[in-house]
Image 1 (cartoon, rainbow, N blue to C red):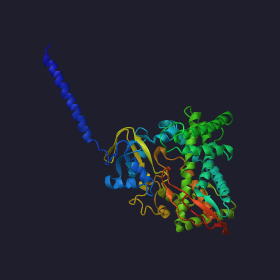
Image 2: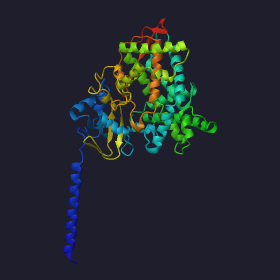
Image 3: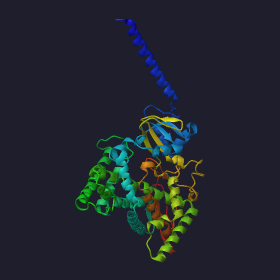
Image 4: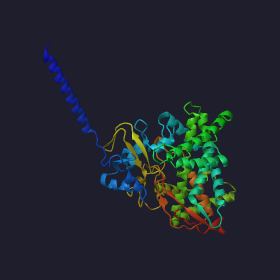
Length: 486
């Protein structure tokens, strides 16, 4: 055998390998770099500093410090994963608008365990779009808005009628009770009674584990929360089975009806039951926080309170003269009230941001987001950016008289295919609550504070001392509402 041919083949193979590696290296060199930043300590990364900042009055200080040093997009390591943090409005919009081929939801492990694989918060593709579309369309339907308006008004009136002289009122507890009952009615048509009290108690146990150690052993927080969810799912599953037996095909009166009428084999009873629990979270968290923060902000801004009260009193007098109840369009016509709600969403940042995982290398703004890395789109830094909002820490609802709320610099409900389907209902509930509050009461407030962590959103703890006064212009005067730390 001619060994020269063997040598030739070996040499060519070596040359080919060298060239391939050279081309690969050149390709990498041409590829955009990672954003600047630091991954922090081994294993724990920068999580401890992130959490310590979250306990302060300005949790965005973690981001602000790195924005000054690295820019609006930087790399970090938080919650156990290497993460690209974006405080850039355009990058956030790109991430939110991308589909599951580019980014998929990413959550802390405890939250993933509690939501389950079938949660609308986690699923992707056609099933997610189908569920999101069905629920979103129902939440925007005129029939539901009429029902929600009627139910919300009744619950608000009943709650406020129970406020007696010198009684301490926990404002956030009041708003939680109202919003939870309204949302449960819209989801599964459950009226006040033993079942809803059972559901409320189990839900408190469930939601306590959303941010917890991912250890599912008897006695742990996560284990207790999972058991509570199982008990809730069992109750909802029973309601669904009763519907299937007696009311299939009827005009939808709640979200369960909408999903059952769809007839898709993918929408199993188990999937629907578990998602009803996940969809109850806004009734416990987001909407009550929005209402409570709005009361705090208008209390701290007398000029805004005065204009808000005048606008709502004008509507109240007109509807009283006509002898007509208020409807959804009446509340939405209150332009300054809507500005107050919008400014509350901007300053309060009920949802501080969302996390996504890159399904492939993504290039944007001169940087690469590597496949498998998390992206944290941090809305709070955008909403409080002094270059985007003049006096960002000042409550200024008048700024929205000429500003577009559809801009990528304002994303309180997320965006893209996963835009919160209940955003219209959240505004409606806040509008109804504010209307009845400012047209029936006056108040004074002591100093209070906002707790940002470990709860998943800013939660002010309001305590109200109520005292009946003289009625003026259909208004019960409450001379003292004490707002204190609890």
